[in-house]
Image (cartoon, helix red, strand yellow):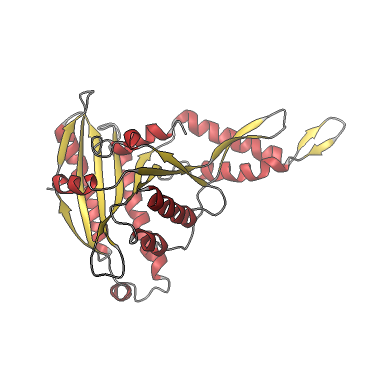
Length: 319
């Protein structure tokens, strides 16, 4: 049974959370024993986390009718240290949340998700322990929120100058990279009382969204290849080619695991600028993501921590 905290929302529903504190990340020498037959240990290790997210998403799909939503948050917080070559140590927490109609529903959901998380961490040779929310809340309140940055997807309307599809909603898929997190870590250890929060909310496409993705993929591919015009032959549209590839990616993967994501950076103006720039450089190849500023009163990490991922998701819809 997991350490579980539950609170009631204003609409009568309940929300619960459990916390895992990751106390030790395994050294490469430990992983080499486990992956002795594998050349690229780093890639295989990342696949463990892929499988974790796939299991969480499958859990969400299997029980989607019995509760409203679940989320995972990976929270990095920093604390000041003395007599070290760095200024701050990093605390790493995995937070599991669920919204439901009854406390029993939430307890069953979170226990199931915690089992998935613990098995993955154990298999990955992490050391961890459960943490009571009261202890985590003290650390959260110590996070400096003078400045709050959010990293969000770059989106726009792209004009195609085509009669069949005059414009399309434009965005980029996030790139796959071989970068590790060392540069982000090196930035965090310079700034005490800061935090980085990676929040994931499982989701699925609605029938209308699926139909729209498939329809736009088909239209963009046809426009990119060329449209037969009376008296002018086939006229291709190079503006549509890039977007056709992006939409096709989402069309092909529409039944795969999908998540909303929030990335928040807390600290003072200097630290949030430095840390968010490092994260952006880690995730960005071109201009897939951008940084925006939020107010502490918008995020309300201290008073609104239980439903924070969903509250931030709604907040970012206006940007």
